[in-house]
Image (tube, rainbow, N blue to C red; front, side):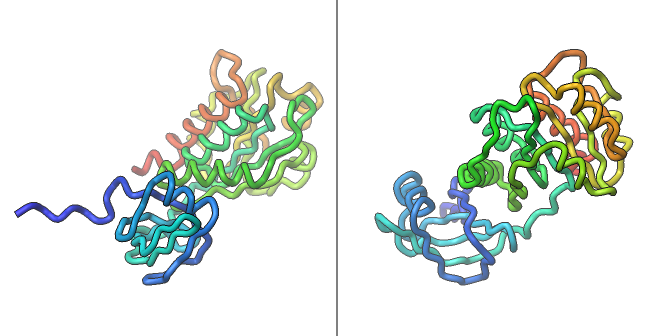
Length: 250
């Protein structure tokens, strides 16, 4: 007798939806989510979908009806609670659109709790489309099976960021002119933390002096080579997750 296939199958599509979700709740999706499920993933009645709401966690849902303009589902079982996210923020200077898209995507996959775009004197971009940015973050979270979305803040000028910085949060500053090795600095710290990475061309002298003078700032180096903004961000986030984040507890 053939074994009963696992339900939901590993290939079931994942989607973030507004919450909170509850067992046996019936949910109707319209617009882009419905188009994704019906036309891209080609779900039909009886198929499984994994839903997350960034509040209660992750659920299985069964498709009741998949039309051209909407998809109706019913919630079945809760799979996981919303994950506990390491208390690590990314404060990244705005880059050109495709480069910053990559930063947001990979920071989400790596598990940061908050993404804070920063405006500096050498930034080539000064705006961020919030809806587009939220879509990038949500799709990255769906792809990597996160159950918690990172908080996505609006761009803020560097001086305002430093002026309003919380006293209890360390600010690790990736300084291409030198600092303590990143891995050692991260490993020695216990508590809330954030990473500050500059734009293409780096921080100017006045900005660098203001950051270094801040009581929460700790200059770090990411090795002997000058890294692009997106490379530095991804590398440093990975090192932090390996030393102080949830990679070390898996």
